[in-house]
Each structure stands twice: as structure tokens, then as C-alpha cells.
Image 1 (tube, rainbow, N blue to C red):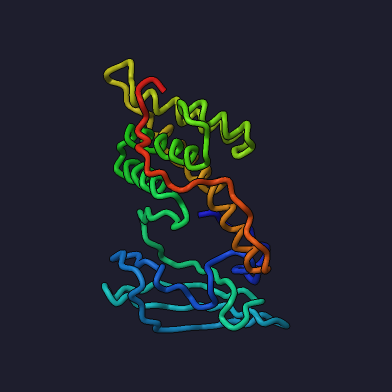
Image 2: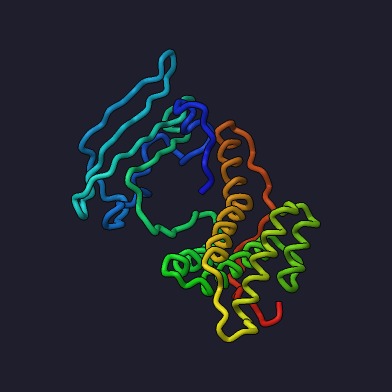
Length: 247
């Protein structure tokens, strides 16, 4: 999810990326048939860093399912030894509408996030807003918010320092707009398309802050031989996060 700010492509894969020094082909999804991991390499070009050990790989792969091609730019970290380290990759083209989420997100967060994106893709703006709201509640409950209405749960995380104040303001925007969609005063009410897009985009940002960034930091710490940070999270409760009336 979260991107890396680079001053040079020689920094790509340094400190953040996938575990291991071999390309994680099993993760790579065909942009055309969406099958994962069924690849045959047809060409490889490399470029070695001047006065260094780092190598950039420029690969072309053929999908065993549909016979289309993708290009993969990837590289292991320069300090990798004996297969231990990190690597990063980018693909062109990439699969569209790939709503998989990260494997370290809680299951109920991922489920609601997927549904929000899929609803937005089919222009079902009311559903997108409601599922984004459900995802926000799943996040705050996973972060051990004191149980209550969503407003109180968000405020509890701010008081404990889990969420910054500015992000809580955006979380409340999601909550309030979702309430309008769930309990419209006007029977002809429909969520504004731009509001729905903004809300789902905010949800993505919240996930980056709450889950992706801590994960990246711990990857970096592991690569340096340091213990992971103890994150303020809870096991996925699997609770139903459908918004109750009046919240």
C-alpha cells in the first residue's frame, strides 16, 4: 500500500520490501487473466551499481495462463547475504481492480475495505460509503477502542494517541456521511459520487497509517536485527460492523 520516497532508484528495495532476495513471483498477478504465480521468464537485463554490490533486474515474463506479457523491475537490498534480506518490485502493466489487501490486515477490515472499493467501482456510492464506515469501525475496534458508538470509539483512540487528531476529523467525516446514507431524511437521497470517492481514499490513507507504516517499520527493524515494535492492535474479532441506527 504505502509508497517509498526515493531520491535514486538505487535506493529501491533498501529497508522496505518483500522478505527474501528472490523475486516473489507467487505474489505477482497477471494484468490480463488475473492468475497469480504462473510465469515463465523470457528475458532478463541487469544493471550493477557502480562501486557497489546492488543489481537492478529488468525482467520480462510470459503468463502460463493467457500467454500475455508483463515487465518486472526488481532488486534485492544491497546488504542481503545468503538469501536473507529484502527485495522490492514493480510491474507494468499491473492488474486493475485487484482488491486483495495486505495479509497482515485483520480479516474484517479487509472484507469491508474490499466491498467499499468494489461498490465504488460499480458506481454504487451509498454502498461504498457504508462499507467504508464499516471498515473504519473494524479498524478502531481492532485497535482496542473502548466499546461504544463509533464517535466515542474514534475519540478514545485520539485520547490514547493511537490516531492523530487530523485523522480523527476525517474518520468523523466518514461516520457522518455514512449516517446520511444509512438513515436518509429524504427518500431520494443518494451519496454524492465525489464524497464517496474521497471517503474510500481516506480509508486507504487510514490503513496506511494504522497498519502499513508500522509493518514497514518492523520490516526495516528486522533487516537491522532489531526486535519488532509492539503495536497497539488486537486479534480480529470478526464482529459484525454494520452501522446501528442512530450512531
